Image 1 (cartoon, rainbow, N blue to C red):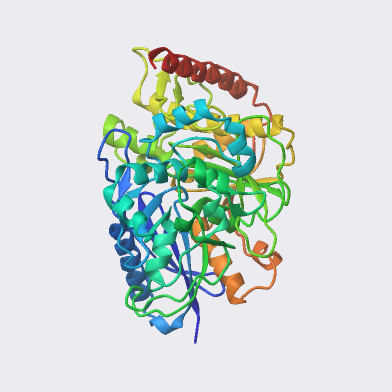
Image 2: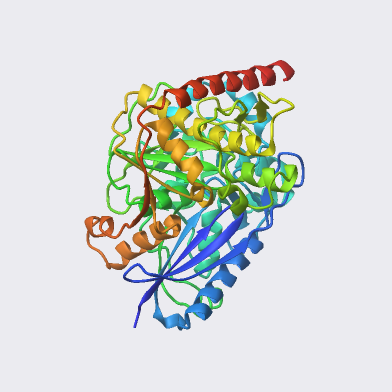
Length: 500
């Protein structure tokens, strides 16, 4: 009897494989780290086979932990890193280079040069995105122009140059299908989110042959059947594929206009469902696509903060102020005391609305009285300020209908951060009892395609909230601090301009 769905959450630093029963109970979870490769300053890569092996190990683990057999698996869903790319041979599946990770900044100069040649708004009007190394197309262009194996494969018309999900789906389904979903396509700078098609002009702009592009399908879709050799004996349909952040939005059941989530992970991401129609944005903030589960699509506003957990890990591993995230979560800050230390979390560049890929982070207000705990607090407050800045931009552009905010990600366990965020936003924030909301989104999308549920309302009813963070009545002091922090951001940007 088919009783379970496996969700594969393929993230930047680790792959999580989660086994859910059909009623939504989490039965087993396995996490395997992904080795980070840094060939040069600003370059970030993964070994594709290391990613695939982490998936295989995770599947094996959850089956063994739950003491089930492979034929009990009804379906599999997978979410991906979004903008990370893998080039491969479509006949053999051989990767032609390492995966180039979304954090990679090697194409900064290329993007800056392109900005001088074209009007960036042309790209934004079509894709909802901005010309930044964060997105996939500049990375694809770099592979074509710098890797002999890629050029050789292109000459034979064997190369697929696409987001990481395409290679993973290809390998998991026995090298049969070359597909991506609308959410992942929408992160490439090549996909027109108005027409829902690859855009010929953008492909030409980045010098990428159209035949290297995968077919684009909904997020809830039968992507093929798993290869039992790869998937621990499982021969089940892959019924969902989606970007991790859109999977999280779906896992939070943000199905309707005005519903938002913030993920505090390696990076931080706010996604706000804005409904069936795009809205005109005068500021430089991204529009993307939410997970597609029927014939329609929903648009979402996307505000990213490149460094969140990576800033926390920096405090632990490099500054050695504290020894673990748990120690940070247990720290008690004197909230009656104003923290006069400010932190700008632009350690890997700064996104909306600035889109400066090579800006560095900074502390402000240091003195001989500054303690380690002041730095820790400033980092958390700086992260919260960045999300307030993004929400303020959204509201300034006329969208004031944010009806709910939910949070997830490892750093969301920090009560100080989430309370501070609620106070700044003046909005209640919900933290679900189930922290694995990304995997949950995959599970929901797979279940919809598998026919477990016929509507979304039944999924709304499944959400259990662990804690609601209510904002303080008077947040004027925090807003005053936020305005000081904005001066710090301007200082960082001016300093960067001065040394460029």
